[in-house]
Image 1 (tube, rainbow, N blue to C red):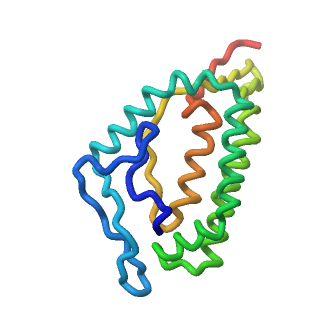
Image 2 (image 1 turned 90 degrees about the vertical axis):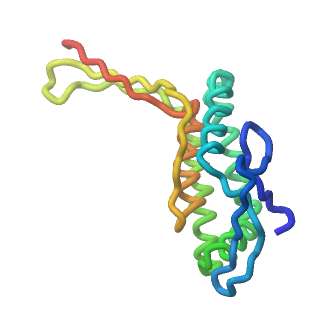
Length: 181
């Protein structure tokens, strides 16, 4: 537990919650307090969103291959710490260790998938369903967003949302245009 950061990571640094409040993390099997963590509030979410917005223009300059490599390294880091991450999840949530290990591996796989997809984000060109024209789909970043994950699969649902955002310059917008063909 000592190695685990307890603050919020916002704007590239660890910091306490804006209100200074903490939340006790309990082992559900014993009720024992494992540690205290920063208890973020709306102001912290806004600060995180503002920091992401400030970084987005620079992030968008990174080519797809580089974004994919960043995701690949994140996948490898998670897999290297699979046992420790699974133990933390088990202690916090009470899941059996085998289920926690499965979720950590599943979560990491989202990052590996999107690492490979980062170089394929190029839109598509298709015939419209009635055959009377063509459809062009272009993917363009729209900027950062706040994401909420469920309590029961926190890591897997987090990486499922983070992976595509990192791969595609922090989000995407689909623009469709049709013309006579």
